[in-house]
Image 1 (cartoon, rainbow, N blue to C red):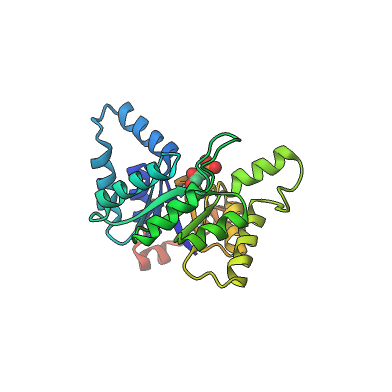
Image 2: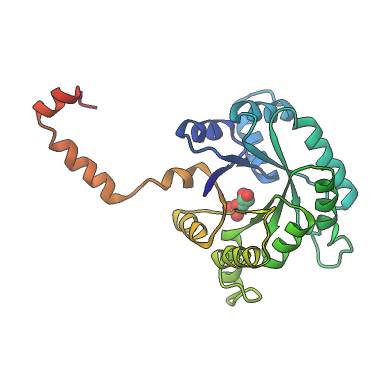
Length: 257
Ligand code: G3P
């Protein structure tokens, strides 16, 4: 299992790096919006390109950083995808995020544009993270088109299933979505594409996507930090600390913290 931080906030990214847990970074337009808002609140002058370059400098050359296109048709996604790739590939390990289906409303003749864009970008050796995955079929098609990562949205699938009060076309939960993708990838011997569980909002999600066979989980900083927390661990620490005898403190050179 690898851990990515789902954030465009440089301070948060730095923290996960300090923890020694930073295997990657994922961003999306909403996360960029949050980071931009925070910088503006601090009165900082903003240049998004330099800011993203700064992220690459902080994470280092090898760590994957996903940047999403915002266009909603093939030509625009290709244009943006290449632009992001060209602009940042010398800075580090760029992944271009392409939605599996860029349509926003029901009737739309661009629903296959995501697949077409993945195919073209990967043909030209651009690494792709296919996002907004809610079915195993979407994941399989993205992998077949050449995506390097597929991002199933765990909590959003869970929210949706709660809302419709039934399975989502045979999918029982967000975790079941990841498990089904894993099973299909194994059975179909998909080797070029990793499962990057996204929309992982709590510790249980993390544990269950790990059990379901995700290769990577991307999470906000708060969830990453929650992974080490347990009431009994704290209670145990309190008791051990109360039991430190001066002789042992002297041996280890302990000073009260
Ligand atoms: O990477 C996708 C992720 O940011 C979505 O998470 O919590 O907004 O569903 P969430």
